[in-house]
Length: 132
Image (tube, rainbow, N blue to C red; front, side, top):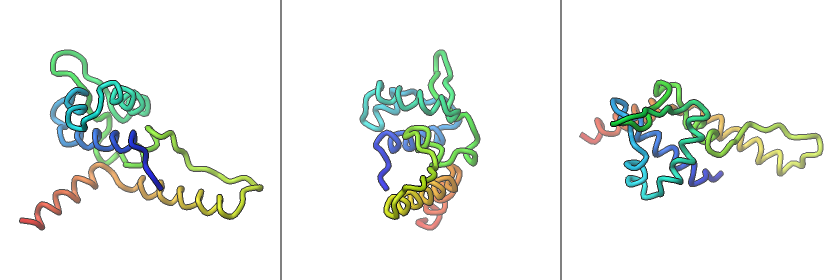
């Protein structure tokens, strides 16, 4: 399974928002950090906003913030918002190979749904403590 570059950029941006929870993060900062255009990020954030994952803060010091707690945003939510992926049901005419790949895809997305932004932070904190 390959995750699109758009979903990869979205996941990185969402992690950055989760690190900077105390203040809105601008698209210009994220674009500089990820070395991509602001217009590309605007497209990504339009999808994230449409799916209720982020919200914009207007005015001086504005930007984007998470719209839900860290434990209520999964990697699966982010990927689905960007790539418009939904679990699929196969038809009666579906051959074995397609059925196998559909089932595998559903398993992978099911697993991505179990990994929240909070889980990623806990894992990172654990790695830092083990390295010390």
